[in-house]
Figure 1 (cartoon, rainbow, N blue to C red):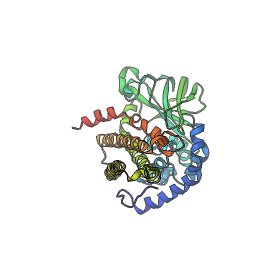
Figure 2: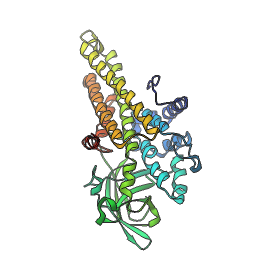
Figure 3: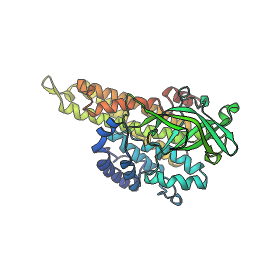
Figure 4: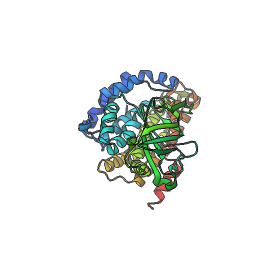
Length: 380
């Protein structure tokens, strides 16, 4: 398990919460990891179990049915999920979508969605990416045209996390196509709305237990009251959430890298070659020493970033730098750990194979590493 003895971002309350997270995951997630991978989705049962344990949307204020905790509790869930080796979409709901509802939602929207998101009865998704628009969200083509007191949505989205499970989708659409990014709005679409269709559960290289989908909107008619936040302010709202979104990915990356390292240490100390363990070779020990040093730096930096975010001080540039560094480090760590496994690392029966597959997309979603460098360079 993760060693948290030297962590500086957490209090005794966070540590006690981590014990609960581990117990819930041990009962409702770990025994079913292979099943989730094979089925390509995490069913409703674990979502409900997490909800009952207070592990979903813990930052939501008590007045809306939440626990009113700080983002550090989200980080605990994200770390344990990534270290366990699951790509379930809990962190999307905890760290990203719920913020939009709580921060921007009308009283009616909060009352309709937040209790269910906290209990696990409502699963959410956010539909940004399109076949022709990824990191550059200004290029989206999905439209939501006004029709009296309604909006008519047309377009398609792809690579949408929780796409198969979602009960409600935050759709990024152009409400004023002539205004470019300034004409973008966030519009809520409920599952079952006429004209809203889910495509296939996409066949990905990794993160097989995450339901990642195509979504289609064909003359989907919703009331204008389904706009989340301000009309034509969607792009601004998206930018406001970037620090937490990118920090969340960095948190998962660091924990995933640690698990890969731990797997490599365990394997090399057990596997023998030429009459001694693989660990006894100097190359192995030096390689692991290098990774250990980088992980030490990573945990210290992550705690710094979490602490800054809890104080409301983490900038978009700092969060982007964190995502860039931790995801790139994760990839180096999982790839090196797989190499130290030799041929066994290429076998799916070993945990390192899944960790390696799942890590590759971390450098892509939430903004590619190249986009992160562009963002960071603006603060140079």
